[in-house]
Image (cartoon, rainbow, N blue to C red; front, side, top):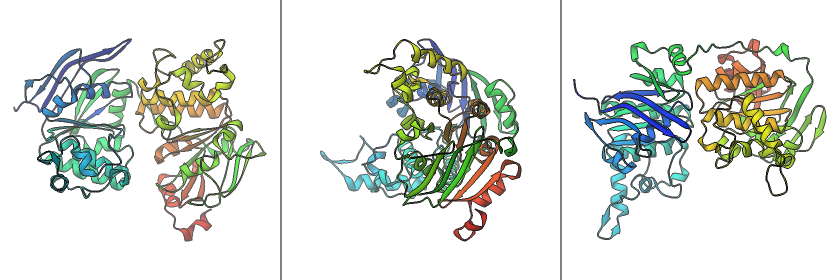
Length: 505
């Protein structure tokens, strides 16, 4: 048999106090999609950084076409035909598509850069890949999906034979995902080997020729396409059986006090007369297609976006919220869908981030924790939320996505908010960590917290919510008890046209 395109054997890597990888192995054939799965913290990103020359391995062998190789830096990886597309894109928004793809490698005429030759070279590449973009378009004017295509073109411009994709669909629309999948099929047909990292099980079923599972930095097993079973893969990932869990019932909280009531919430650009209420101990789900107004509702509610009208009551008391600080003062905490940009200070430690919304209560005038109370509170929530961290002094950016999410939750629990708004609470989080977040949300509701969950995943909305608010075109089109809800029925409400909205609401 022909040697694998890429063969990894016995890879180990440790950082101070942490063993990230131990004796990991896998192989990749030409024209194959190998899906690499594992919980956050399983070692996937560390392994990919070793293959792309960002980290040096401690032990193990890497072979390309059967030949042992050393990869000391990203340039050497690219010379070997290995390119990686990171989850967080690395593009310059004020440069064109062509300039981003060939940055540092622009064609020259004598000592001068040739814009005409650059655009022609880019046009040839984009045409070959079937990507409908103009070389002269500014990247900052592109959609996230189009930017992802630019990243792929950039990676393949190095004549990549091995393409590593890390969560490539995390921010794409359904149509953009379809475009990406068509491109992957074309790349397979050309003999490109693809390592695909994803937490989305439906993508795994559709794309994978084989699956390799990592757990706690170790190789657990491999499955050929004929052996792929989602329950089996999940059990391999987490080391235990993960059940679907019972759906909550609206009747369980119907008689509880109304913790938050919103009436006639409107904005100039999108929202129109949005009204709803959340009871103590209730999880209220928000469903809708992209642009329906779910996140905009949360942002208008907490004062992050200006609203033109709307009345807000917390525990029956009318409150004025014109900025996020007002929402916090009234016991409303908002966990943004972009936890890294809006929820955390990544360069600070766990203790600092946990105390971030309560700093005045636990710090002196210059920002230092006083008398150990803040650190004690942090330790309690790290324990209660099962945050995996060497210490509360660990820098947050070094934690896995699921543990970062728990630190954001700890921040608002430390503030003792009665109303918690979770926007895409499990985006970018593996299936095992999702279960922990689900359990945590249900336990918070059982303690009497009123919770709003905004999610693009209908199974998640059904799994978590007592009632479900459906939105379309900036309006509430229906409110469903979980007992009567189904994915089909929710989608029916989420796709209502303007003529139907009044009847449903």
